[in-house]
Length: 139
Image 1 (tube, rainbow, N blue to C red):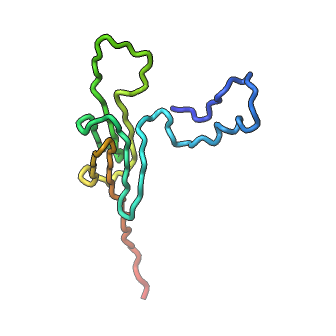
Image 2 (image 1 turned 45 degrees about the vertical axis):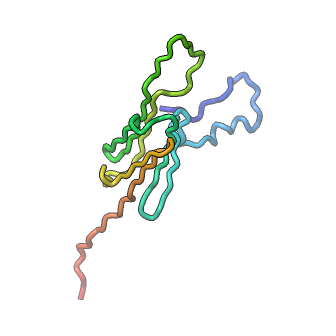
């Protein structure tokens, strides 16, 4: 579990008045460790998820639906480079992220499109279930 209220400095550091409050105003649901950035749009009937996957090909991306969660996995083949020594590696070879879409959504309902490093998932909104009234009318 990620701790969102981690101090940025040691206790012995001189903290400015406003530095103390910086950690309290971090976005609570933003995972800084995730390198799979997503924009989510809403229309009247659908949600549209736009996932940035630069450098990945269509064949390297897998999408699954299980227990109401869409999971997107992307994994690149590691390139063998003879004679080269890395001093630092920050480009990840794989990434994964899950999104809750509801238990009513089926695999056939989800549309996926990959173009120029952007994966676009279109998910229909669940319609509220109609509750049938069992009341007896009074004459």
